[in-house]
Figure 1 (cartoon, rainbow, N blue to C red):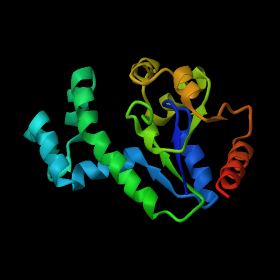
Figure 2 (cartoon, one colour; figure 1 turned 180 degrees about the vertical axis):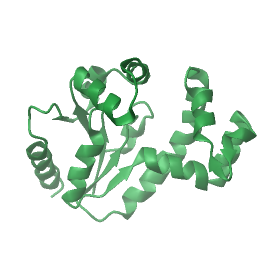
Figure 3 (tube, helix red, strand yellow; figure 1 turned 135 degrees about the vertical axis):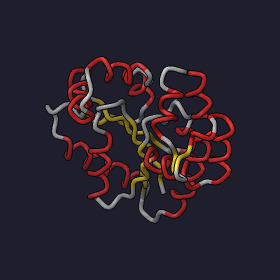
Figure 4 (cartoon, one colour; figure 1 turned 90 degrees about the vertical axis):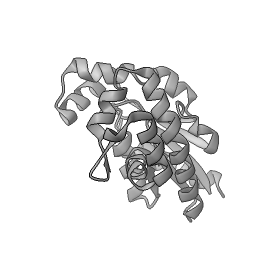
Length: 195
């Protein structure tokens, strides 16, 4: 079975692309969602987070996301520390999940595939890209935030062009090219390459 990564910058529409793959019967591991669950469920990970970020990291047995976000948002050292604690656990969880799948390929959807060095455990990486203005508009509408706030988030991510250069396949989610035919073509390619 092929292990495929699916990534893209904020507002690129990678979750939309992941849903299309799911309708084709391909299982998708959503790394961000799983990381949130793991941070609540994994005892040793919780202990590390509390050790580094304080007791306020958890409230009512749940990760205090607002507190953690405030800690790491403008502090690249603390963000790197948090990622260095959470990424290995999430990567191991994804690896275990992949081994349980019985399809020709399975997908790991994650914003930070290259940043977390998760690409090393994958056979191929698909990049989802969209023009800057469209990404900006999508995130503003989705999260109800200002263009400046979106820009702040974008600035924290790997440069879009650099990210796409590292991908094996690219899907253009630019509202000019149809999305589903691109996904279908790639789906066929991946199934063929695994025969």
